[in-house]
Picture 1 (cartoon, rainbow, N blue to C red):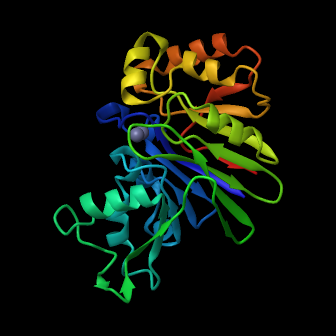
Picture 2: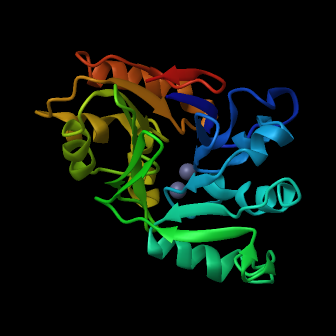
Length: 260
Ligand SMILES: [Zn+2]
Ligand SMILES: [Zn+2]
């Protein structure tokens, strides 16, 4: 199983910084599964886009779904089966009410026709698994300003867990530490410690909050840090290394491929 990082930035870049360090959150698992659909999806070719059958969404925020409505439209001629979007019922209801409402974007759950739509929604709740050709996707607890979850993907050999957007969340780490074969944990850290008040208000992590959650946890996997707000990336990593001296960690890089 390969996990290709399409985008992992905490904000879009533009002008001379476009593409550095990639767009917002999107991970491609092998050729057919995507986790979140932020602006990082823009690096895919038309053929690669059309081969995606399943999209798992951590939550409804725009930096994680921006490409979803547009990609459904873009691949409609190349595909003869609907794209399946998996998310919590709460997130699916938000998408239906606020995106696929025939005002912001057409309701592709009913067009081109209700029998052969562009997209179908399938609810997946925290604690549930979805098995697909030797790979298993598991929904993990998250705590954010809207209904959210983390997502783990497992092959027969190894497992990668992704926090999605979250703030202090011991339940996520307890669930992660129980995953067999855990090799990588992609965890967001949006803010440096000086912005801890903002981290609390926006329901994101800063280094101090991760260190508090990890104290006493038997976490042996490598931490890959995502969702860094671009001007603070180096500082956030410095603070994480100081707060977690015994943990192997580094910034997740757009374009890299993790093999599991
Ligand atoms: Zn969010
Ligand atoms: Zn986000």
